[in-house]
Image (tube, rainbow, N blue to C red; front, side, top):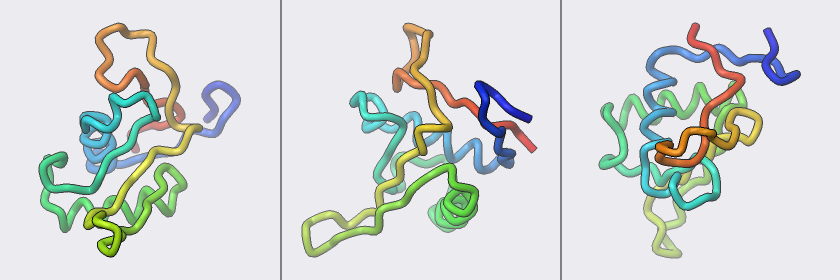
Length: 106
């Protein structure tokens, strides 16, 4: 299946929950796309699940994860959603200014 000429990627309910949590982070409202630091305060699931979901979404190409760099004062990983899975939102109430696209619940 395609949306806007792109193949749709199937995601699980748990993966979509993770993506909604990322979208709700204060970093997603900075105008640089849907992204977040991997800190417990941003997620509605245990960090063990967060790490597992990050692995599957990375394998699907939906997200990119930057590892923590504690030597530079960055103790958390950083995650960003790939551009092909987000579009600028037309909803004036959108928290991040972006909507997900090319994703389908499995």
